[in-house]
Image (cartoon, rainbow, N blue to C red; front, side, top):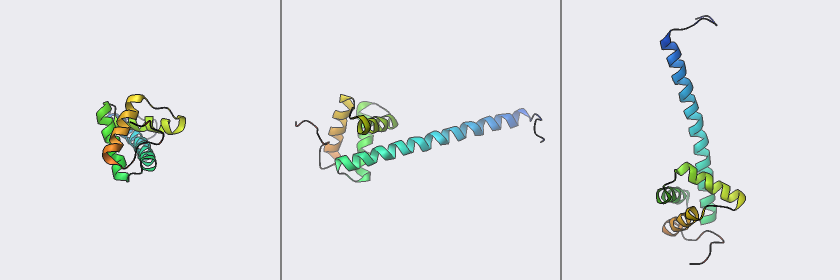
Length: 110
């Protein structure tokens, strides 16, 4: 097909579907990177293994009813700015108690 010529409706539907798929893949790669970075923070701060870090993120997500990617973003913001919503912090502490050997640094004693 020559440039500038119009393709069939099936061709334009296919192009649209492929563009949507490419966008979804880009979002998935970005989301994966955010989650991996948050796992790294949990591993470093909570002194847990990467598998335990993943389990901690899943637990926090389930106990706060917040999507895992959003939990990961909140943890990254916390690492950068030192602020995290209290309910997320409490869920993170609880999850680390279940999965790891230590509390979050600077957490108030129970």
